[in-house]
Image (cartoon, rainbow, N blue to C red; front, side, top):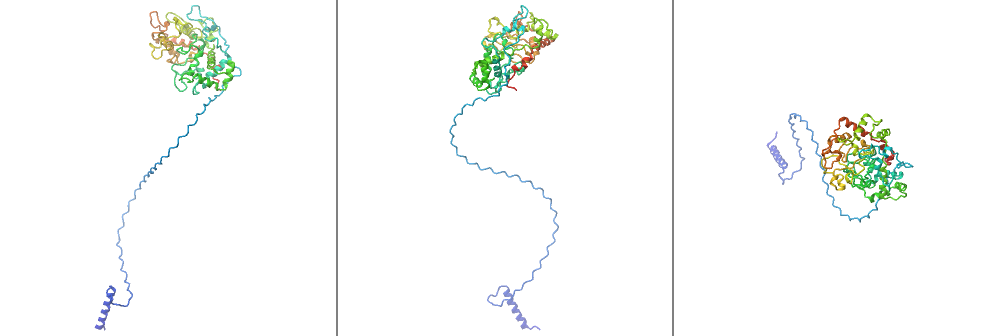
Amino acid sequence: MITKRAISMFSVFFLCFSLTACGGGEDVTEPELPAEVPEPAPVPEPETEPEPAPEPEPSPEPEPEPTPDPEPEPAPEPEPAPEPEPAPEPEPTPTPESAAPQLPDTPFEYAQIDWPDYVLENQFPAGAIAQIAAIEHDNTPVDNPITNEGATLGRVLFYDTKLSANDTVSCGSCHIQSEGFSDQRTFSEGFEGGLTRRHSMGLGYARFYFSGKFFWDERAATLEEQVLMPIQDEVEMGLTLEELQQVVASQDYYSALFEAAFGDSQVTTERISRALAQFIRSMVSFDAKYDWARVDVESPLQDFPGFTDQENHGKVLFLRQTPERAGCVFCHTSEAFVGLHSVPDGGETSTTNNGLDLVSDEDLGVAETTGLRRDRGKFKVPSLRNIALTAPYMHDGRFDTLEQVVEHYSTGIQNHAQLNPSLLTEDGQVKLFNFTAEESAALVAFLNTLTDTRLITDERWSDPFVN
């Protein structure tokens, strides 16, 4: 049985233990007792949370925009370099040589021409207006006859592109053999692409221009003078005469050619012009259908056995001279079919105005050379041989076909103040030809008989730089 004393002692002991455990009773020294390790408090079980709703699929993230590269720091400006000493001017570079022309060992024959009788003598009937033998038109000067060697040199010069400022064009670029030594372009193209003012006239049969004057406005007094003008023209070839002489002298292949033509190798502009003129005067051939048929008759007015009825009809229309119709032969005379031999009315030229325009404002023609009002709108009359090859026609290339040319004379002649008198009636009215369709076709058929294929294919007049 527990006594009151025991209970009292137990109470005191418990009080002391409590004070010690609570940090009190610092003055009381008690033996240290091992601390009781309290039992861990029970961990409450977590409350059961509801299942979370499924999260939606995440939308694809947009691709990040590329970050622009940072602008580079500007480089510091370099110190200015000292100006270099000016280099000495280089010596002028000699003109490079072009490929040598391909020439025969023995020169082609240019000097000897097999002249038909009807070229050497006038076989038109007595009284035919303005008709003479074609040879009487020959403008070959005594001091520059054609030689085989001279014409050979002229051929090379004619086709050599070195004779232009940038080595791109030659005389043969605008006077093309297959086109009757004319140009099918209305206006020819120069060395830098510029265009000529007038159409390129055919060069065939140029030796029969009796006046000896050349170009549409006859500004060149001789063929020797004419051949140098396109070379000096600022649009066509662009060389000075001094440059021309230097360029030709710098090509090795010219030395032997000049020596053969003139006795030594000296190059001068005079010799260049003489050789070119010889080559152009040699451009003569009598191998057209007209010539083959002409040998069978004594007079050009007779029917040609070798012609068709249409061609003979056209020939009659061309040669006939009546008060109502001045035949074409009045302006295209002789059997070279060139301009008048004589200069009418005391004038300075045998050129003509054929009524292309009522007035002449832009191109005054021969008046630009002579300064005379009576020469306004007048132009040189070209040969009609190979005329079918030399389209377009007239000084400005306004007509594309021979049919258009015939139609002009039929219905389109304008009453210009300087109109050729043969195209006027006695009371000053225009004398239109008024050809029928049949007559127009016949005239064109006749003009086609003047085409000479030898002239346009013979190697003598071809480009020697083309292999």
